[in-house]
Image (cartoon, rainbow, N blue to C red; front, top):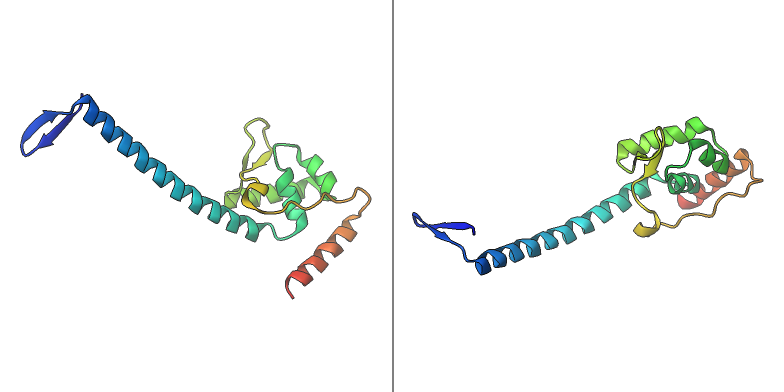
Length: 145
């Protein structure tokens, strides 16, 4: 039993009173969690939208699930060092985290789909780095119009 102090005297709470107080605390914590989650989702979406400007950025982020940087680099036509640089930059923003399973690899902290951000189609295997860069430049020009 818990004790409750009232005007200099201590009164033991009944089991019912103690349970009611615990229920109220749980209810309030649930409400705090709902509001915190809403704010967190909005903030995460804003950071991701700012950090992932191009389709290539989004694909790299989406593929960052603990797989090797070399595998992601092949898909995107980039170097492994480029992928690791993305990971480090994104870690600073709080949108990736070191993989718990694979040392030296990173994992995305959020699912793009869960936050309403479309994951672009994977690049065609035959597309060259230059073609992808030209495509991204045209996409950025269209977005800036």
